[in-house]
Every structure is written in structure tokens, then in C-alpha cells.
Amino acid sequence: MKIGIYNHASDEQIERDMTPEEIASFQAAIEANQKSELAREAEEATKAAQRAEILERLGLTEEETKLLLS
Image (cartoon, rainbow, N blue to C red; front, side, top):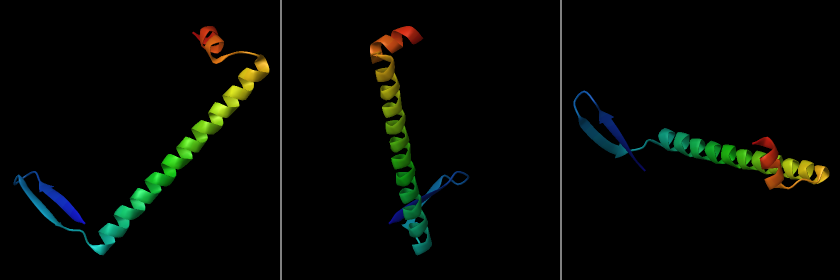
């Protein structure tokens, strides 16, 4: 994998191979981001299900709820 380094002072750009440590760090960051995204999606799905359950108990549609809250 390559990494680009830009020096603003000299306006020079260098491209080099990543070190094994940089590759491991990069892959760990990608995995953490994916886990975070999955957790966020699961939380949104849970909230949507809870919202739908409440609306059903109240006998309201999504559109009626929007009208009430606007």
C-alpha cells in the first residue's frame, strides 16, 4: 500500500510504501469504522421499530404523527 505525504512548506509531495505498522493501524481503523457504522445502523433500526410500535399502540400513522408534530 502507498501513502502520500505533502509538505506545505516546500510544496513537495512524496509517495512511499506504508510500513507494516502503518498498514496494521490503517486496517484497524477501517475495522473500527465498520463496527461503528454497523452499531449506528442497528441503533437506528431499533429506534425505528420502537417508533412504529408506539404509533401502532396509539393507532396513528406516520403521516398523522408528522401533522401533529409540525
